Length: 129
Image (cartoon, rainbow, N blue to C red; front, side, top):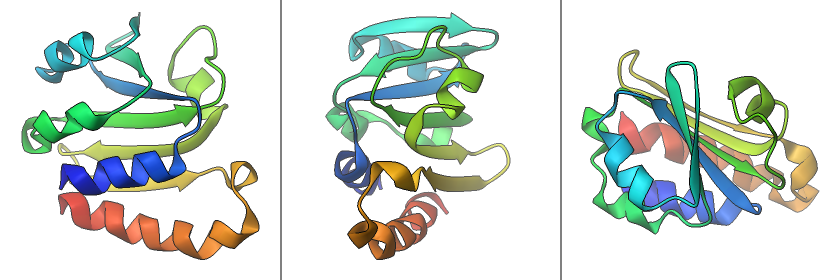
């Protein structure tokens, strides 16, 4: 499961990965030790990473919510609004609502990838449900 997420993220990754989780989630401990730095806004923590291979050690089953953004430049302040205005791709898993989705800003990718991008959405859905 996490191998597929890592593969999709590495395929679409721009300069940085920002991971958004609830501030009280148990995942915070793992992310803290694997991130370049952290920002907190409201009930969420935002972890800035340049790689995500540590996802192999994460069980997504117990995670209530995780958002994974890929960005070229870090917006300030780091929060949901600034990330939603600047992402190349966004993957979201919400166990509480049993949903997952992938959003891609196509301007960051060549037209030749459009078919691949559609197929990646199906891979993300299969990863978790």
